[in-house]
Length: 131
Image: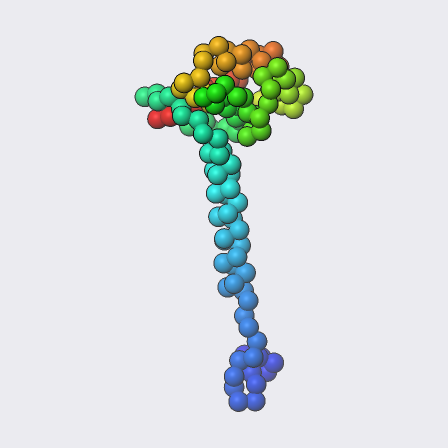
């Protein structure tokens, strides 16, 4: 031990903060990882079930259509009329798009979303289903 760490009677006067910093860094990582899942599950969409559904292997833009037919891109509500221009200006043709539509939404609204994506030049589109 260093002479600065011990008082005259052998009592440690310095505090070792290394374990506390380690714990704080681990907690920070845990909060960062869980914040991603909380943000994705903030919208209430009841997905239809599919027996052969598989999780996406690459990162993609999530477009959700709730039961009322409202469209959201990445958790932000978007007017269906402006969806195509938003997708083409913000994401571009190389983007992978995942569409999560509520099981009770009209099929016509899903087709509008798919048509807007195709109009924006996005060809890699997948539909999200619960397993």
